[in-house]
Image (cartoon, rainbow, N blue to C red; front, side):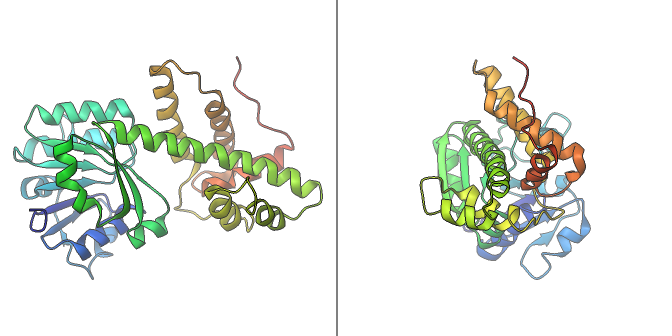
Length: 303
């Protein structure tokens, strides 16, 4: 059944572009693509993806609509009461949100669309832009059993690991926790790298040695060795602003569940300092520069 459905893809940014490329390359049916940036659409000209004039056109034509957007506000603008999806999509359409949003936001949109006969799944993605290009993302899905069964074959065009985490909102719970752990780990890694270097151990030597022991991690091997050691913090990668958006969602979820997430709050302070200290728009592992310049940890939140 999924082989011939018409796919709509909205949002062709750093992650959305590669995901749509994989979909257009592997899916046998039509793939319609839209982005506010015309150049992002043109970048798919060598694939079977068909440019769409608007989101409303995609909503009217597609059986399954994938979204890859910055966050709650953009998803609500597309799928909420005043959005083109509710206005133009047929009953029976499925919306799959690949964005990272708040848990409450995902559940709100899911309920709103369900009242209009439109199915919804939150399916945020993890791993790097390179993994997106290879079609090897980890995708965490919140959906009913029936919707998951329908969309899983399509998600596997973009991800090598597709996990059904539970009902709507569960995908965002897992993704936000994943991201919080990464952001916190990168801050801890930055502190230890600065300490090690000032104590006489070269950063690369330190991380290569630690990678052979119990301190090894994905963050160390990827963010540490590939970005923090060479000081490679490019523009148009995942910046502190995006980190802070996700941390805000995590802290909101923590408050809703009655948990005081102190470590996450400390990490937020570091990334706020990075954003305000010259790293705005640059790759978030640049937070190491905050520690180097300050010479001491950023103060923890007041109790």
